[in-house]
Amino acid sequence: MFAKIRKIIDNGQDFFISTHIDPDGDAIGSVFSMYWALRSLGKNATVYLKDQVPYRYEFLPGPDLISHAIPERVYDAAFVLDCGELARIGEGYENLKRTETIISIDHHNTNEGFGRINVLDTGASSTGEILYRLYKYLGISLSYEMAVNIYTAIVTDTGFFRYENTGPKALLICEKMMRLGVKPAQVSGMVNGNHPKERFLLLGRIFSTLRTFDDGRVAMAYVTGEMFEDTHSTREYTDGFAEILREIRGVEVAILLRQVGDRQYKISMRSKGTVDVAEVCGIFGGGGHKNAAGCHIDGDITEVETKILEAMKR
Image (cartoon, rainbow, N blue to C red; front, side, top):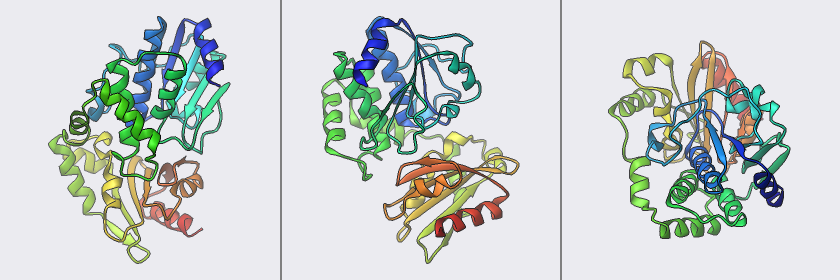
């Protein structure tokens, strides 16, 4: 697949790069590193993100201009990174179908294989890890801009090396990125230690909804639109809250319900390894990893909670 990608890049000039809505560190780091990789090869690259770059990743070097609407034009190829299905890049994704060659690069086992070329490695810690291998295959000399994005992609998807998907390859790549000037303390400080006050006000409200089930092995909390308004916060402020719930002693699965509509919730599930939450989310059309997954469920709070608990029993 890498050989096919090399040929496509060599023969093209204008490329499109995107990832999923509500992007995390792996998504942003992957997209930005691909931008710099293509630019280093003398290619034009358009970066599209449906959402704004989350404040935790604003420090990452990226393009001066990011498109938030998919242009109605044809590209030589489109790179869709860290995304299981094309529709998850956001509204207007149909416009991208005009581009004949879509290249999907991902590490989620729920990827639908929607690309003309699909690079899927479920054993990789992150999409950033796969991209590092691609860049080395292409003979690209990594710049600091690429290195810090790759490093951030890997460390955020491994929970800064706390998750089970942390492997020797991920650690070795990060060591190489440090040799290119990446400072772990700086990255950790920007991602984990640079939050606005409103995030903590929101977290307090969410903690007040915390309940446990199944003898304390399942923890569940929720956030509503009203909570966002009262604390003057936004959805990106909840990034990482499910992981905090997972830290509770005895909890094997942590679940955060975030209201996204009058009767719709975005579900984030985290597991300590005993439960495959990707399988649970798959029941509702979602997906992800064994230890981290998400989906959308319609209903009010009580209905959504009931649906989730019933799915987990199944």
